[in-house]
Length: 137
Image (cartoon, rainbow, N blue to C red; front, top):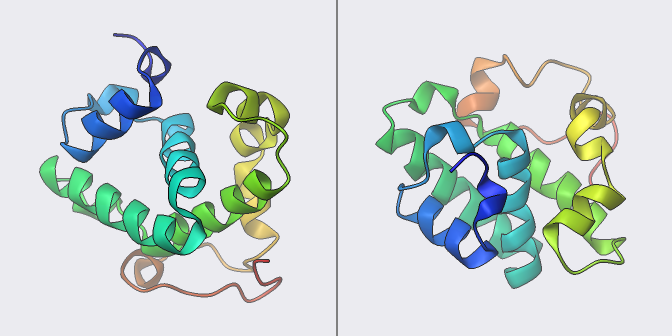
């Protein structure tokens, strides 16, 4: 398998949840897909909890806990949720086609909410830091 998109949403979520998804398939777009699935299935509040839990378990299983960033994970889920609310499509590929900036300009979206570098902040990795510029909707 070369791409996570070869899996149905159900297969993708199952493989990720059981930590069977190959790490090479869990790229930035796959992170977005995970959040998109959970938001569309469960709403934002539940999705935030699930995304944090599932990504935390996944990186722990890979012995790469140092790559997990709590603030970034929650912030990304908030940003994706905002796009889901304005989306006119029901499938992930249509969603990405509708909002390509989630792939190409993701850091720009983050820096609209944060004045500091949450990507490299040790505190942001373990504690949720709310936006200090523009709150999430």
